[in-house]
Image 1: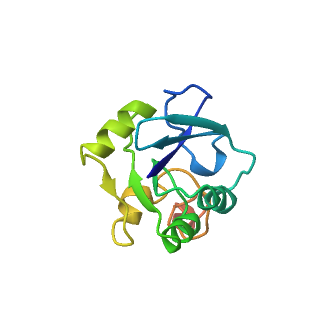
Image 2 (image 1 turned 45 degrees about the vertical axis):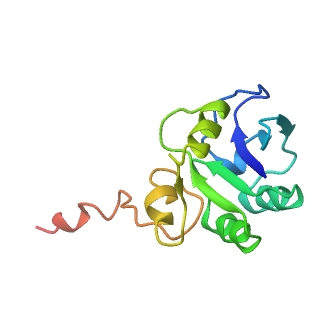
Length: 140
């Protein structure tokens, strides 16, 4: 089994990167806890997801993932686990995974776990932007 994680630096125990599609490095951990760190040439969720597919990844641990790359990964049988909101390193993530402490992301809980709370990369969000906020009160 190969577990992939987006990471911030090329260190073998780097902190996981907050944005999947922008991660410069990925850690690939195999069953015997051997960790390879590779530089990610691609950027953008779908291209990064395709790279993971090409690397025969079985599991992705991430704290952010767009819906399209998620669907792509799932269509290849790759399981996605939520790394949580707080800072977590590669070794901590692997330990949590094997201890069954991470939530698997499903179509049902995707929005709750990975839905974009404060970053934009799609058009399906309901954010209230200034401009339509209080303008209707000015007609006196």
